[in-house]
Image 1 (cartoon, helix red, strand yellow):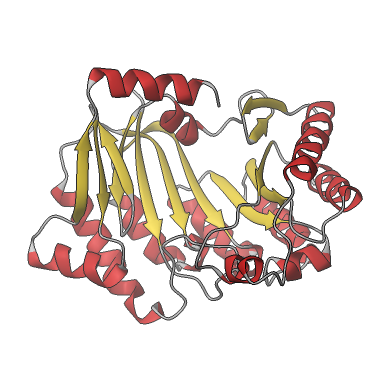
Image 2 (spheres, rainbow, N blue to C red):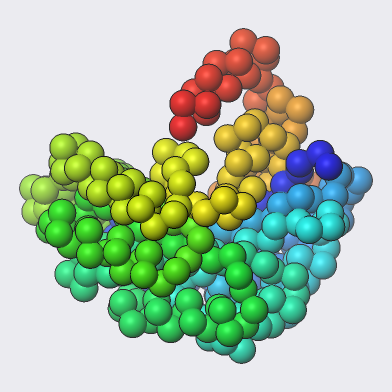
Length: 310
């Protein structure tokens, strides 16, 4: 089967974390139904395309979608048998009933944004959940029938010690998930964290500290049976994220939703950034693309080398 993916960007959040510079909005909940309509229309207009071997709902907070809304988008995507369908979730925005409805709609993989189990680190990151919510969310996911569950962590937050990080990784692995992602905190200009660092109110992440913490997660994950398969990802055999592998192997994938990026046959494109503009473009019959580039053979070869180093 030829691997082909569909990425769907859901840009809505109830709270914006202090380190986040993604295309997300906390004051656009009134647009959700119109946005879902636009995504469905966009998918219909892009036919024909290969049956998707993977679908990824990213954000933002895709788990803010009601099950019926998510199902509408997923039903508009032609999926190959056995396709991987992932939804990123905030532990605060799910319960067993919602997750069971997601599972019934065809979702078969969840990725929970955890970042840390240390309360003071969560506060520093402006996260709203607490450690107990993570365990509840994972338990609810299993009760809803999910076997493939991933946790996302962030290391290197100012105020986080190596002991804090070790405890976070151990607690995450103790939940028995088959996939773990761990990302070094980056400070982006224009974010609340970026402004605090620029003003000298908060120290910038330390490279040596982050390197030490990377060693910690690598050792602990491997000891727990999760093998390293990409610079920031560990998984049990068979639990690797197929959609992300598609990116790293220069595969083809559609971009649905505002700010989404797509790639087919050496052509890369990106959609308009805001949900309003995306809805307007789709309603008017115009392309949602904001720009595109065609990669020549040399550019693709250079990217292949870079991606292989991951």
